[in-house]
Length: 374
Image 1 (cartoon, rainbow, N blue to C red):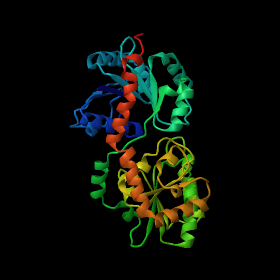
Image 2 (image 1 turned 135 degrees about the vertical axis):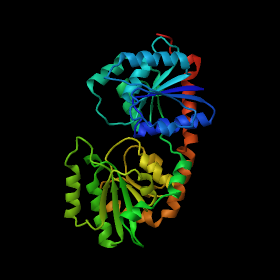
Image 3 (image 1 turned 120 degrees about the vertical axis):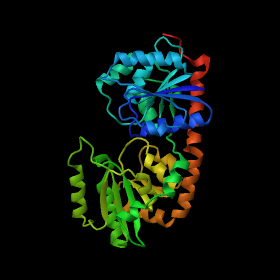
Image 4 (image 1 turned 45 degrees about the vertical axis):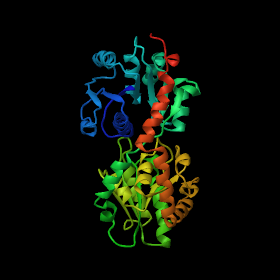
């Protein structure tokens, strides 16, 4: 099969990582894949080096760049893909416009389930709705959101969970410098890791309150929090640090900011804790499950479908319940880690993700299901 992915940029991010992962795996399975990047400045070119993925970097300027649209249309005619798959808003919109007049099915993507869609984006989607066969969401909540946003029937919205490269994770963990032990050195410590940007919906104060309960029982518990304060949430870091000081947890909790070794930090911890109120697909949960670190999380997104052991999921926002779940899952860590690894191998390995995507594409590449040229 010939597949063309269209994405606004190729910097760091969940959607970008999935495009890279799926492109490389599809090529390994014998398919021809192209990735058209609308704005290629700072693109992760090295991530696709040696993979035989055809990478095209354009230079989009402004929301609607007619030159980019014309070049993308020419590329679609030259590449002659069996399917075009857009990622994020720009990728969705440009993929739709580029197929105008071409007999090729186009799919879009939905990566979250709760974001506010600007009026201009809603208008763009409405004006191009007839140029798209369907939407691929990465969560069940995202699929429901996409059906409402795009006014699509259920059969035209599919769910494909994110995947991970197990070999790459194993290699990185094997060569890790053990960063969690660098933050909190010492034998006999129990290290919890939180990986999330510092904003209210990730609820770091809840993690701190749970830690306070644990430390009151056993002072060997530690918390390492990785993540920056994003624009639009200025002051959140100061509030979280003030809560840490109020709870007298400065010796037990460290906020390390942005890290390039997040995977290694997770793998070197005993538990990954997620206290989010909402969000998209939890990539960090997959990375923890693949690297042998037990996950404990509040109930949001698709985690109730992903975590294999019931005690890993906390249905309340009570620090008492979260502390109890951390104690239980740490004590039962070996069994839970084995169950997590089996789940990832069955559902989220790059090979399994690519096969599931191809199965999804077959719905739309069948001639009977294609839209007529417009």
